[in-house]
Image (cartoon, rainbow, N blue to C red; front, side, top):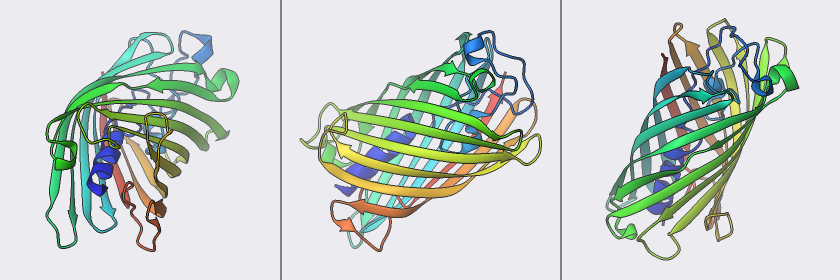
Length: 304
């Protein structure tokens, strides 16, 4: 069960909150967007909050590309790890709307103490669609809805019956605001992830996860942001969190973003699990049978 849960967590990382946000916006002042509903007088990088995401979308006719790397590690009862690499192109054809097709590769593994290591991989792709309903400049708070359907081909852990098709989706509500003018920004994300398998054992066919993320960030210079993030995450069977309880976990960690120049940005974050609870109950050893002890992200973006 652990290896199936670890793979699901790594898949969520690949296709949801962590890897499907491009960050075309730059930290320097920018012109207002064409639509008053999402107008901003100053662009805030969506990646400035770490795993959490800001509400800004790409400006009309602005495009970019990003390479996003996510690594997870640590669990109960053995050695667990997972890596996801995502390549995404994203931009805007319409005001307030951002479209971002992407491809991803995931590898995850688990070796129980004294046991045999099992490993699985996924190669897939999808498209992220974001629409900004409210802009901070007009409404005092930014509000964006994001959806990211995707599909992949899985090969690995015997518990899944060998080769398997994986279908996933994410629904996210992204809010942010300027808490202290020019000095402190905050973000709140509500995230729902789903994963379904076309050919696997009953009880593992549908998985879902709900996360609440909060983050603060501050511009140290015109090009460097530092901050912190906290999250609470819940996993269950069933596509709509309507099945059996799998696990809960809480994370905290630092975040940074560096605008290298007008084209390149680099951001990263490390989230450490400070509380974990799964079906076996609370344990002094953190890293549950679903959620890893460490979650790390590094992402390089280029704006056309």
